[in-house]
Image (cartoon, helix red, strand yellow):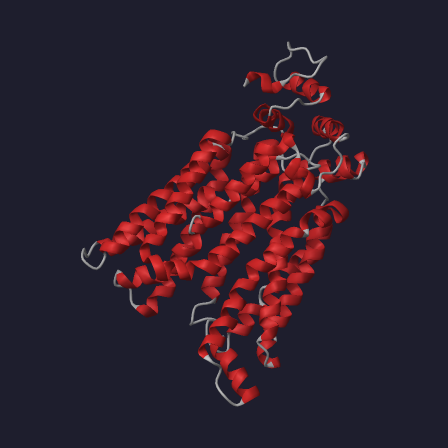
Length: 466
């Protein structure tokens, strides 16, 4: 692709592109994707509140299809500017999809499967990466003639979703709480559950709706200043920053170099990279099955703990690999352990936690904040890591180790377990930490579910326990 950039410039101006200008253009091409993701995250709340979860996803497919067509025809059109613009458009699509899909699935899911279903989007992200790595092999589409087709193929999943998603129900919570249409919400629930008796879930939604009537729909500004959601918001920001600043992009950047130093031939490195992608898929697949038994908190702590330990050992191994022969193999082990840690905890669970720690009125704004932090940190790492690597070398991983450790400590002391709890139960747990009261009708519902003997005729000052 960089050769295409240079050849296009030669055809226009008759001279080769300056090396520094080519580096700038390529950096823009790479960085425009996460920047577009940030813009897409800013669009989450307005779109999901006005168009619904399903409606937003349908609209969002248009961004992907347009970007795929533009990138796929860029070589024929002899323009690299279109690729850069398309990367922004594709980033907007990713920014919306990465937030709306977990929100949509979280609201559709039954309580006992909410965590498992919440990890499924991350599973398909890792599967998509693996498919891209396979198709990007030099023997398939990773060559001069094949790269435009490879970029154009990204529109196929979106076209499939555009054709099939209209036949699926809208989020019942959106229909009842935000649209006030209980009949449609009941019908959607009955289709999703496969049985007619959905009264318990409808009643839970009614109680959530009543508890939020006085608050109204929360904007991002209101969310950031609302005391009742203070620790939820801080927790989401910390987990999203930890997820992206933990060094996952740096590990993948170093992976090829590590494999080469271990004796893997240059032509075979791409196949080893594919195998790492396969491990990523398998461990995320495993997380789907263990999240409901082990819980979210354990996976977060284990995930960031593995990342922290592997970054520390990787720093040592990279610095000693020129003097101790077997250190190269230890580096490969560290990369694999890091990928496992990220796949089971750091990558998928924070998006699940956004869905579970916020109620209907605040969830869109929470995803907007969490998604913005996610993509801004992604953009920042892409922008500064090459400078970090040039200045610090392998010691860069000590910074990532410290970030993982700090995130793990925060989760241990602050983030509660949300496994198999209703949104209202989680809200009550966080109300204690925020030192706020929750409404009487919420208390009544909770008393029926947990402690029938407790009276609910007046609000409980939950902060008094602290």
